[in-house]
Amino acid sequence: MFRRVLIANRGEIAVRVIRACRDLGVETVAVYSDADRTALHVRLADYAVHIGPAPALESYLVKEKILEAAKRTGAEAVHPGYGFLAENTDFSAMLEEAGIVFIGPPASAIAAMGDKVAARQAMEKAKVPCVPGSPDVIEDDAEVVRVAKQIGLPVMIKASAGGGGKGMRLVHREEDLAGAVRGVRSEAKSSFGDDRLYVEKFVERPRHIEVQVMADQHGNTVHVFERECTLQRRNQKVVEESPSPVLRDDVRQKMGMIAVRAAEAVGYVGAGTVEFLVDPKQNFYFLEMNTRIQVEHPITEEVTRTDLVRAQIEIAAGFPLPWKQEDIRQHGHAIECRVYAEDPFNKFLPSPGKIELLRVPNGPGIRDDGGVYEGAAVSRFYDPMISKLVAWGPDRATAIARMKRALAEYQVRGLTTNLAFHRWVLDHAAFLAGDFDTGFIDREWRPEEARPEVGEEERALLLAAAALAETEASVAATAGGLGGAAGGSASANGRGVVDRWVTVARREATHG
Image (cartoon, rainbow, N blue to C red):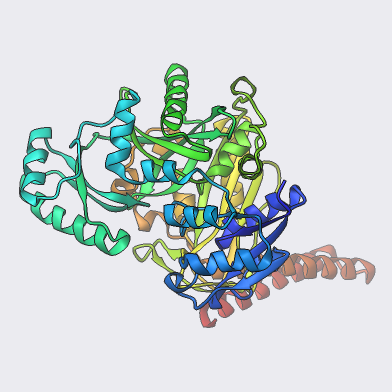
């Protein structure tokens, strides 16, 4: 096993990796920017190295700074988390040349799956079902229009190097094709430095289901079942669950085997996710492969009783997979809500700021993978995620009930969160019935239905007021009893205390 690992990331995923390393007795090195000097991952790591200014382009995305930090601290391996440099072939190659282990797949697998057109070609060769589309990248805009017409509208115009919901446009009308092509090229050039694109048939009312795969350096590959990732906003997942509430068992087994075939086709090693689009008849088609650990990996860990991040580290150190395929079973149901500092009532705009109060839910079946603490700041420079809230239950109904409880208990003061949005989702009849597709949020989201009677800050104050009122009322009642006062007077005094504290709380909420 490694003696020391550097985590080339920040936030909750850096915290998650640090904890997995600690379980293994491995020392950790955090890297941080100016904005993250007091971040939780920096506080938890054994060592920490400053790597530059707040903007990621000047810190977390500078490969040379990460490599230098690893050399300087004697780190034998680097875990990239997700995002940033996790799927960067140059970074992987730099580490290998320096004799430092990259905790992830080989550069060849990252390259094979990183280019969407090359990945599609590799999957077709491996007999993995793919959505009808252009066989190669298309340079000429007029050719894009011709291919789209040939395939038949609606189509998706996609950047070859795209990912994370960027570099794609859905086109329903022929007259919108030219504008969509220009938009995708522009976004792809600015986001990925590569404006090549391709065309894919749009699957009507699809579900987005992904399969977790794990492979070691000894030729063993397994799938760790599926995650339902259909609930998305702007092509970004917001609520995930496992298992899928609609997938037939025969389709589940077939999808798992094909995901393993896809991973083996590119010589995959480590943790990865094969993503599929599933139509209403449960025909499924390869979408892409994410060559890293996923944000939503905790729900798979909960339902399969595995530790995927620990397994990642062990695989990179040369150990065989800790399980065989027949050892992996699904137990119960898990749901994940991504808690963000964003305003669901103002176009989900980020809401950076200092967390003045943080009360994280717990109790049976609740897990919170967070990257912040009370007093910490959510920076405007990075993804505004506060935590990943997970609820597990023996069945879907119990998992939903536990998640509702957890969302009701979750308190954040000092900035706006999307907790009200998640409560709206968990109460929606279509979600409860499992009857939704990738367009669900765009069609159904009604802010006025989710807006609470009081704001998040006022809600936190009222809860605090209720606790104080209960204490004072109890004291008043006890004092009344000891002094021989009538019970009615003590009760009235208690109600007066409650009213007084609620009035104070509302005034504080109004005036800050």
